[in-house]
Image 1 (cartoon, helix red, strand yellow):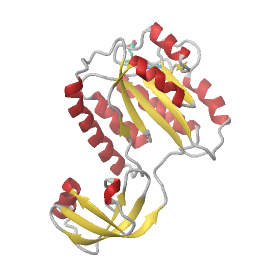
Image 2 (image 1 turned 30 degrees about the vertical axis):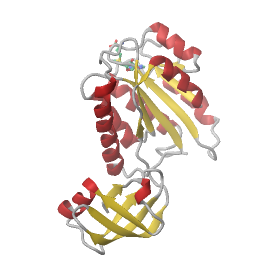
Image 3 (image 1 turned 90 degrees about the vertical axis):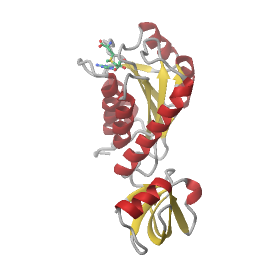
Image 4 (image 1 turned 45 degrees about the vertical axis):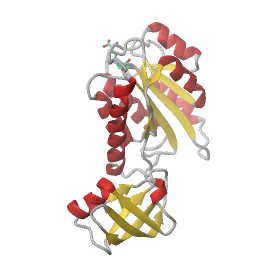
Length: 254
Ligand code: SAM
């Protein structure tokens, strides 16, 4: 059954309204008609099977038939802090980590970030990233659309660490603790009746500087290796995210 995320204000108690691009998709691509059923989600955890009651090229109205339990969401909330990479790599990070189960994305600037940050231009790029997150969430049958924040500066990112139960800064020069050395004790002590928040921080193509890693540790992060191979900046976050969801039982075994 086709799935659409709609703005929360269009998700009523009895009926929902689908407008814009999604309405056009239903009418033109899906050739929808009254009586057809689709799944609608408000992107914040409310999801329902709905039945189309009226259909116009720009607006589709549907009645709620059955509210669905939140199926697509991991119980552990993992955010990805990604140092702005070159080209369209950020789109890859957002698409793949949304499919795997990330809850939000925090693009940031660090010492060796190559991309020049231009507030005016970033607005358009962030809008594109939000669209990528929505489409990936629909395809992955997520119940929420992961949030994509405006890029933040390094010091602002450090201040966010206090909001998390665990922060892992991925550091390929780390000779000591590897990700699993940190995850095993963390996962074994979890109380599944409450949500946990984890942040993964990934450096740019040039990596983190030693001082940055030490500053991150002073702010509460754990510096972790992801094995002896050097991963691309767009690969590291999805590798770490997968390990965290695996270790915390999101892929069986819990
Ligand atoms: N200094 C690296 C090099 O020698 O090519 C470049 C950094 S790597 C391309 C980009 C980012 O991915 C790093 O900043 C780190 O966050 C993460 N990363 C890549 N491989 C890693 C590994 N084996 N362990 C931990 N983090 C890794």
